[in-house]
Image (tube, rainbow, N blue to C red):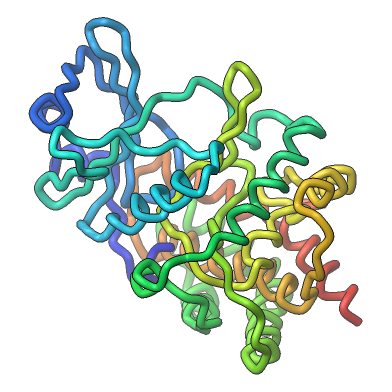
Length: 347
């Protein structure tokens, strides 16, 4: 999750802060990895994080993640917990020569993993067997007994209203005299056209959040962002759950809302849910909590993308992709339509 007033790091800013050569030297010094070629990969929506493919002279490939700040030790801790629990569908980081799962480098954190050639769930459909496997693995994760030492450092669901407030702060901006570049002006027009829908999303997220604060559902370890883009299939159809940057202790619905949730207009077909829950097993789903999370995630995306496009000036390619992601949420069978259907089924 990105804080409301985050300062996006563009590719140029990142490269100025940490050059390719600095990364290559770090890999050599701390991992003994001698890089012949380092390539920036156009993956992920987090503007404070960049990923690379590093290839050595003897053609070994590594996945390099570079994140701004020094607060990413928790991710490695959670991955180690999952690995120790026998979950094979994760990719543990390669340790430094000093046995550490991460490496601090200037103002950044560097994480190295094996490079898995494959496609994610945005690029290809999961087979029925893979859906069932995903359900089994998700159940394993939700049943892990998280030690108190880890629970103290991992964030806990608090049903905060910060994203709702962030979207409301944009209302005045889009209702005033239009300003900004072409993308910003297009977004203002789009948000005005869909203002009733956006207000409904924000207000209903607030109402649902207040309803469930008085409930006491069991909190479990959740990935928090397990959409199709974070499920990777390799050439042998083995599946991996990636991007454990922001785990949370929360109701299981925090993860289950993605199954059938329609993020990026995939994972929205009934048979997929059928096979997922065949693997996950019989469980009672709190539909109010499910509806809350499906609304709240859209509100967060509107807040983050809206701020990025209206209040900052990231590089042009990022702005185009962010604008596409923003408007795609409102397509048929997309996340907005599914969130509203989830809510309507409550009544």
